[in-house]
Structures are given as structure tokens and as C-alpha cells.
Image (cartoon, rainbow, N blue to C red):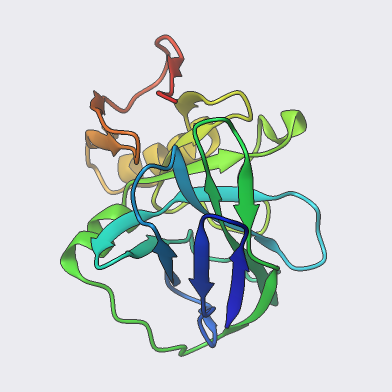
Length: 204
């Protein structure tokens, strides 16, 4: 278990024993106190690389939070994970990184809500040069939006094009589902999938 704390917050994070080679990993942590933070995130990257991404974690009650990761590609042998909490002044507390192996047949049980989130992932970036292309080390499947390092949202064009081509081959309409964005700081925005449109500024 990794523990990170200053005066606040206290983060208890036990990484999963493995990452499924053909599925979405579940990341869970306990954070005390559980309220009052501007963001609670799970950071991840292909082990051995420096391109760090994140997904927002969701509250599950009793100080517990969870997130699901994109599926790894076949060139990713392990994933580096950490959990981070940011306060209203932008100060972030992170756990030490944990390296988790990618294993075929790794058992993961997702709830219906978690499976729905896995089909509508919003992946955040930490570097300016992460714009363009896919999420390094991970499959496009399930990724519908990207957030750049300035907090601006945009459609995942690379993955959307791939999904549209696959749907077209199957004779289905290449329209993405609506994505409901809910942040720790409150407020909900509904964003329609599809190409073009203005970039949405994420709420702080």
C-alpha cells in the first residue's frame, strides 16, 4: 500500500495486482477527508515512458474513490500508476508510483456504472506535446474525449476516426454517445460526441 499525506489529504492506495491485457483496469483509493478537493485523479503511463496521462476518480462513499483505465495495447508490458489529490490552490499530493504488470486473463470485476464509464472515457494530458495521436501505450477503444494540460476538452479525434471506420464497416451510424462530465468540484456538463465544435473549458 502506498500512503501520501501532508497535513491533508491522507491517501491510502493499494494498486491492483495486475492490469488485464484485454480489458479495463480498476483503480481504487481511500482519501481522507473525501470532500473539498478540486480534483482526485489516477495518473497512468506505459512503464518506462514519460508520457503521463490521467483519468478523474469518482466517489464511491465512505472516503473511497475509483477510476477505470483505457485498455493497454500489446506493446505495454506494465503500467505505472499513482493517485493524486489537488486542493483549491492547485497544490497536488501524489502517492509514489506503482508499477503493475499487464497480464492476460487478469480478473477484474466492474459494476454496470464502471463498465459504462469504460465506454466513455475522458483522458487527461500532462504535456503540451501529447496533443495529436492516441494515448501512448493504450487502445482507442472507449476513449471519447481528451483534456489538455490547460484543462480544455476536445473530442478524441484519433480514436473517433478509428471507431467511425469500424462502425461504417459494420453498417452502423458512426455517432458517439453523449458523455456526462461530473467533476469533484460540482456541476455537470453534457457534451455531444462528433467532429468539430468549440473546445470546452473544464470547470476548476
